[in-house]
Amino acid sequence: MAELPGQIRRMSGGISQLLEQIYGFSRRCLFRVISMGPIPSHLAFIMDGNRRYAKKHGLEDGSGHKAGFSALMSMLQYCYELGIKYVTIYAFSIDNFRRQPEEVQSLMDLMLEKIKSLLEKESIVHQYGIRVYFIGNLALLNDQVRAAAEKVMKITAKNSRVVLLICIAYNSTNEIVQAVKKSCINTSDNMEAYGNDKHEDRDSDIEGTDMENQEKRIQLVDIEENMQMSVAPNPDILIRSSGETRLSNFLLWQTGNTQLFSPASLWPEIGLRHLLWAVLNFQRNQSYLEKRKKQL
Amino acid sequence: MNFMIHANHLLVLFTLSTMLSMLWFLLSLLSLLLLPCLRPCFPAKGSLKNKKKIDKGTYVVGEEETPKELQRELMPRHVAVIMDGNRRWAKQTGLLTSQGYEAGAKRLLEFADLCFKLGINTVSAFAFSTENWGRHKIEVKCLMYLFQRYLKSKIQFFQSKEIRVSVIGNLAKIPESLLRTVHELEEATKSYKKKHLILAIDYSGRFDILGACKSIVKKSEQGLIREEDVDETLFERELQTKCTEFPSPDLLIRTSGEQRISNFFLWQLAYTELFFSPVLWPDFDKQKFIEALVSYQRRDRRFGSRL
Image (tube, rainbow over all chains, first blue to last red; front, side, top):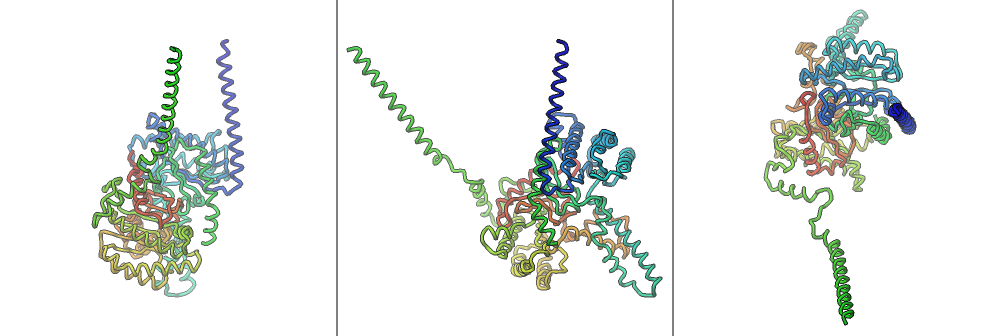
């Protein structure tokens, strides 16, 4: 008789495992069907609504972000199962440093804990062979977080199946200014080398046209190459949770032609249905987009 | 005898109850038929309700009375609009594409006028993208001709309403005649300060950023700025939106249901509230705009920091 509760527990555990497997199997079947049509190659997420989630459920402050992290892991699993190669997430903005110091600190602690967990054997990184990039002004982070981030980038550098870009201490305007500065430096270096070569070749007065040449030499590709996000193509879909419809200084340069999608659910409530809806809409618009691309 | 009386009573009772139930049945039937006509009619999509409100506004001369649903102090300072859907509208209404564009141009002027009346200082409109050059040559030519004719004919209108008009964009490929009209219009309206209409013709957000980059390079070569001074504030001042005091729109509206920026402002939209309307641009009337403004005023703009 004393064994009965234990047996019941084992049975219910077994049943839920079975249900999970059935669910996973049907999900993968569904993904097979969907991937008959075009699949986006790059999906970006703005994970908004964690604090409101905690408030809504009466949880303590940090729990919203923890719930958000679980939602993120599920989303990543779905994306990589579906065959999406690049996923970018907006983890922490430079503007977020202006929040209350306690909140910033707890976020940094959470991020350190989660970044370290990426290196564990059972983590999603090893499961899917993810290459991880940390995009942003990493100098603004504390030493521990920065060191952990750099370690993860180094260790996952050999992975090539799928890519995860984590935007941390990131602002799109900051990224653009840094890229502009770098392309100016490169251009002036090139001009110097070019000028030296010219002097070697022949005696010609090229002072007047120097500036003009320099201007001509900076092209869109120069700025694009120096963008931190140049390791990935432009996002096909940008999903922002919690119903807010704004970019909040995220991937401004890259989302010129990105499909924007803002479901009302808070980030920890995001689920498979939102991803499916976004992908199906993408597939619906794809033929129109292809036609436009041909026009360019 | 008693039995007869009882039977009679029963008969009377039976007849009365039958008549009452029939009456009751008739009354219910009647009420079902008449009730919809007795209650006030609720028209589709609240247009009648809002129409009343619209009527309230149009009787005020000069500044528009703020509609009941909106708060004057929460009005955006700069509204940007991507005027999408003119060709589809023309197809739907059985008109030519050029007529669709004309309707779109007319709608823009009405929209801008309404914005200024509601206290919005700056309005920018995406008239022609760098990517639109890829459209059919005749269509592009027709569009350029429409711009030129429309802008020229409206110079007096802008002057009478004291609206400053600026045109931003590459402007290198547009026809000479249009360029002349643009200069003429900008010259004629440059002194007005309170109302500003910015037209983006042959504009691309990326080229705007590239242009700012080139301008910074030039200035640093000339020794006007040092490389270490280049930050986001300085960069913003080099963009084409430097013609206005409020380069970043508070609200961007895109019509026709597409949910994309399509390379309009990129830098400037960092914190802009986006509003996507399924309506086609020529149908985007005052009521639809008020819906967009209501949505804007309800939003909680945190700029990344406060709770």
